[in-house]
Image 1: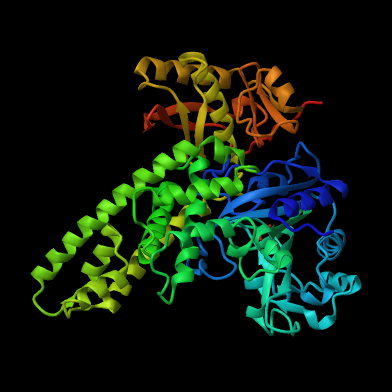
Image 2: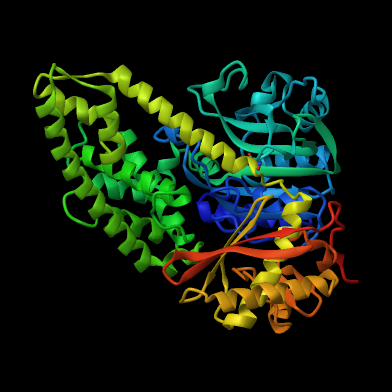
Length: 602
Ligand code: SER
């Protein structure tokens, strides 16, 4: 019997790839641990970038996992049948191991045998070729040999059939995508001829190129495979339902919102319910992942989606008493807490935070109403300006529809074009911000970031020596210019302590200690006194990096081979990050331009 429930699909996927020689690894945190240049983990490959670039993975060259992802670039599509902000990606990887033939054959076997999807419901796309890489006839031929008829194979350009790099530079390559027929009647055509009737369910990426700063592509050291299958979409297929909100995992959340909604007569009611479900599910997972609502970065993304959910819920008349968001979050936790135990463990924090956020926003809405009255009172003509409408939107969270509706009651117009202009300008600014953040690059394993990464380990160890063992890493962010390290410590550091830490790190650099790693299980790493984020990685092999006898820490790498390559270390700033968490910014200068990368201790 093919799997049906979401839990069974997850398990079937991992079991299938395990039987094909893949090590089952834990999904990484939603907030990237070692790559703080991105806001959220957006694909299973993110945490694996160093290994796609050639670092050795402790679990071997065939891996599989379930990765929780957040993608905000599709947020405007949310509300349709298949796009979600927060979703689970099933993935399998070959790190310089198998390539196109095996990857496609395994995908085909899993889809048609394990999941029992009829061949005639499937179609695929392949890369049509351009100046950077040839037409992917090879993949098409393999699909044909598997039994996919020619008319179900479409060749599409880079926009469709090329994945990555995740940042500006890094691993990428042509991909082949698998689709399921969701149109009416018998399947027809392919994703090129009948785009909207075919739903993408899986993507096999052949990561064999590195995209360089100047936009050119060079072959990677190794040929990798990176695949990603959307669990929710596969559940739609196997459960024969119409949307990702109707699956066993999501339907109870949808029904919860529906049951407390007073007004389902609006023409967008279903879409609004879906937005509430999607956004509050994402918010629940973000909170569990350690993100708190704020006005910057991830915290701002979280705040916006909570507010967007509240606005949609108000349209549905779903907020009748305090605690609406947390009520929905409780259903999310009921649905996902078995597999994602960190959700259940943090239930009370999630509920309290959502209650607080909801209360504040509803209060902001009140203030917005007052501001609206003021705007009206000061109007000289009969039109609210675009800037005022945007101010109501941006500061008080008033959707343009609400402003229009309230204005219409007093026979006043709103300059919608002006609003859209102000909105677009704002979008461009935040988009530029997001791109800048991204371009620091996942794949930025440059010499400078490698040095700063090693310096971060030395800093962590020195802080523990000077301040005590309660110090542990809360976050780390490395750019080519500086490191930023957040750690638990209750008080501001004195200048004396800062100096001591700096000196300890510089002594460790001067000692020019060798850096290398050993592979061990988490239990062995703990027994060896290694520090680091152990997460849920029980029983798995991890890399433990030693820097002389000064530092021993679990980490994916890469690092420099000798501490002397760091030159000299300087703390530029020590400040508060949040309650009980301090933040240090530091630099290294004067080391060699070329570095050697630390290897394994045999
Ligand atoms: N990285 C690819 C994607 O996100 C395959 O996992 O689609």
